[in-house]
Amino acid sequence: MENLDLRADCARCAGLCCLALSFDRSSLFAIDKAAGHPCPHLDDCAACTIHLRRAELGFRGCIEFDCLGAGQRVTQEIFKGRNWIEDRSLLGPMCQAFTTVLRAHECLLLLREAKILPLSSFDRQRLAELQTAIENAGASIQLVEALRSETSRFLSSLQSYFRDDPEGERLNLLRTS
Image (cartoon, rainbow, N blue to C red):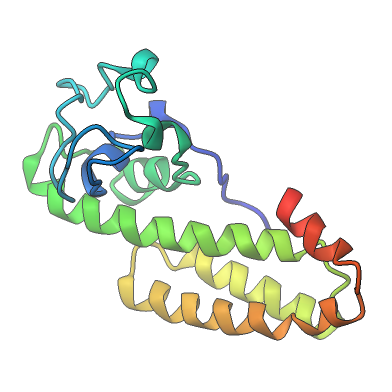
């Protein structure tokens, strides 16, 4: 099952990556920003005021980041279109939900990539079960963290599929897909 779209759709989000995540001044970001604080380049509607000039202004990290659809899922599905801009009491809960759903979507991406392996029927079934559980976990921190651990153990168990691949062709497929 691949019901969730793991592509970012900023138009359906409320600037959650620019709010929930922290960044340090570096080659990727021109300023320091604490988690839970809006980026100073967000306007009153949570749109980026430097979007077209991010690279030249030192925000390459913004260009390289992909929330994997977590932002719009939190905004549209979990908070039903409500957002922290119109209701400041949602700022903390939306930040927490975003970071949790982002972790869940990272697991989903890895599981989708693992599908290209010639998995046994047992492993294919386990993958499908994990994927469904993660898709249904919502923004429950405890559940997502437990499922992340299970996913990590499951993916580690797939190493045997690479033992019979001395040229690393399967691993290269995973890296390029």
